[in-house]
Length: 125
Image (cartoon, helix red, strand yellow):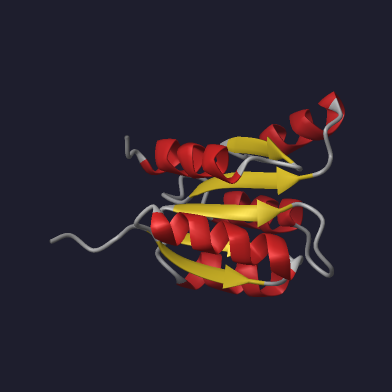
């Protein structure tokens, strides 16, 4: 049997982080959950992840900072990036995609929808 695809979850709210990790784990992913941008940056550059779910507003390095650094260093990187944020203005969404996000989910979100989006990014049906 094939190894499960790996997903990185970076979310500073422990309750949201736990729900996302639980739902993705139940969907068959191997999940690594971290609480801040610095940890997400380290994992993204040193792990082999199919998808990274990055909260935009985290202390220290934001999800946008992590995304921008990753895209500058690994422009054609194999990890798909989904930004998760309460920032819902058009300008915020545009900035996320301009920074190189593959998808953008606005909080509050439906966990099942997030799993579907991660599945789509990972190329699973």
